[in-house]
Length: 211
Image 1 (cartoon, rainbow, N blue to C red):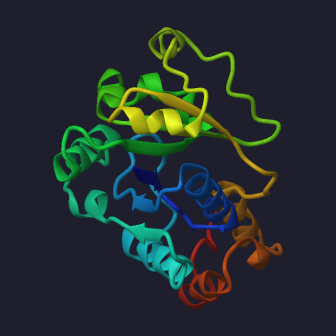
Image 2 (cartoon, rainbow, N blue to C red; image 1 turned 30 degrees about the vertical axis):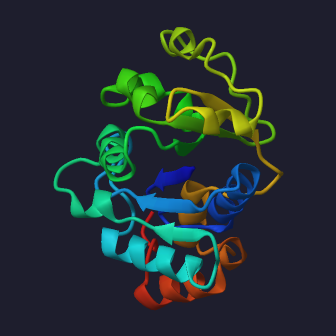
């Protein structure tokens, strides 16, 4: 099983790491972080790609089971998940299980993603659900597209290369990149929400001081 975790990581924080660690343990798979270069579904990142990548490397240093793939940052143009999944499908072959870890909030808008109906032909989706953030009801036509795809157990994803959905209930863990950026800009306490080397990097480069 190859488990990809995409996002802007702007900045990477303890909530990102907790989600990746929990998903990796449940699926018994290493987690590949895929930082976005030019994300199409949100405003421009608050930090340049080189800073976001540097912080991600600091956060993951020395942590077994985590690695980084910079394919989206190296690819010109917008960072579409369908292109990333097609890239990875070409790398691992047509029969190897491939999964994409995504938060419930992002998943509920999947039908607005580029070529969204092709995504489940390329990979499974593991939907991380935080306490107090229910995933249902899903909007149409996404609900119809997902019907009968939900897996009952993580092991179900190993029996096919793609096409299944797994709900993954996450342990309570505070963490929001947007709230973190606001706290930094407002001069409020924020350092405890990120790994110590990431906090030092943010301070050293003066990141996120402008709201």
